[in-house]
Image 1 (spheres, one colour):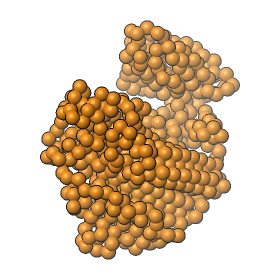
Image 2 (image 1 turned 135 degrees about the vertical axis):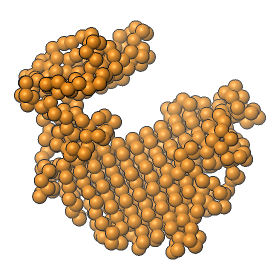
Image 3 (image 1 turned 90 degrees about the horizontal axis):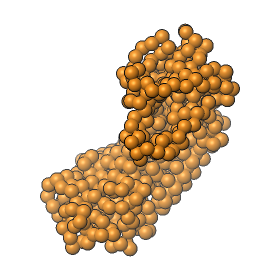
Amino acid sequence: MNTSGAGVRRAVGLLAVLSLVSTASAADWYVDVALGNDAHSGSSPVSAWRTISHAVQVLSGQPPGEHTIHIAPGVYSPLSGESFPLRPPPGVLLVGDGGASATTLDALGSQLLLTYYSSPTNGWRFDANSGARGLRLIGAGYPLSVVAADFGPAAPSFRDLVIEGAQFSGVGVDAVATDFGSGAGAAPRLERVEIRSCGEHGVSVNAYAEFFAQADARVELVDVRVSGCAGDALRLESAVNSSVRARVTRSRFTHCGGHGVQAINGSFYGTAEVDLFDSLIADNLGYGVWATSGTPGGGVTRLDGCTLARNQLGGFRLDGAWQGGSIANSIFAGHTLDLPGLQLGASWSCSANGEFAGSPTCIAADPQFVDADAHDYRLRWGSPCIDRGGPQALTSLDLAGRPRNVDGDLDTVLASDMGALEFETLALHGTPRLGAVLDFEISGAPGAHSLLLMSRSPLGAAQATPFGEFGLQRARIVGEVWLPLGAAQPFVLQRRVGLSPSLVGATFAFQCLTDSSAAPLGRALSNPISLVVLP
């Protein structure tokens, strides 16, 4: 295995194609591809510039400060006058005012599209005030690159982006240190970013340092989706005197041609670390997670509240001298082997193949997904993974951002589930817009009855009752209906939102009281839910 790897060669190669720009007082600036003109001042929507390239060039010549470039909806490409790559200076935030669905940056085949490059020569230091929001990035070899060289740190932040069709990796994070005694640190944060259909990896993290130098490349992913990439969804590779790290929270890595996560530490004095929380890694052609180290003690992997399912080569594989890590509150299912290679201890977890034998808080069982063939990895009513998670998970959120402290088996006791998605006995599907049809899913034992309550108000403070926690405001309850749940689970109640404009902005809350033989008094309260009516 080549542990110096293409990732290191790419990191060094990127340094050669990144040219220098000058240094970047707080202000808002405006770009509009349809109505703007680069001869304008750019200081208001009516005097907007036409190109992002011109805006970046102007701000690169100004004193350091915080600047926001507001980008009007449209397609920004070389055909409209853009020059790629864009290299915003520190403190500049690019914002697509119409969101990623309306604002596209198309590089039309350029190697780089949006790049953040710090080094001693340009003196740039990127922090969380730098970055981009609400954009769609397409048509580039590497649509988004963050590179730190020698003493230059690079830690911009990105939110609400769509990155698709990259020739190589959708996001590249590289730290390269070559000067004697130097250190490089790249540490971007991605939140609510969707990466799809890349020619190589979704996110690639690489670090390389020559002897007597040090490099650290890390990435934080929150609510990130990676799918359909030819390589790995997330790949990390460290070389000599370097470390790579990833902290992944509430993210989905699915349907990639490689592994969900691959972490490689192949050189002395190198380390690799991966922390995965409340995430789904499924339907990849490689392993769900594969970690390998050529250096003793060179790698740690932690999984907590995750679901690894139907990855073709297996679930979670450790090789070589990988130090180990931990598994908690997680589900492994649909693999020939859930845990090939080195073994890790586990707690409060399920292996459908029974590979957690000897761990007293673990189970060997079919987790009973809603429909694994359709890639729906929610739990069904009666799943053995419901309310079987560890007590430490009660304060976290699941993959969908919902609380973990739910009474999923209707015994009136709040508990967390194993896996990425918490089971709710009352769930709502659909967008609550005027005239839309909403599906209320109500779960319980076949033949049970359930009383659905509705209040016209936000949820109230939780109140302890003999039937569990009550979450509605009692004085604001405006409706109730008894429902027979029947044999099929869940029972689905459809209701249409009214068409009156007066409903827009109104908040409604719902909760069920459902028959349950597991409850002390024969009935238990579901989790409460709420919605706000949209136009």
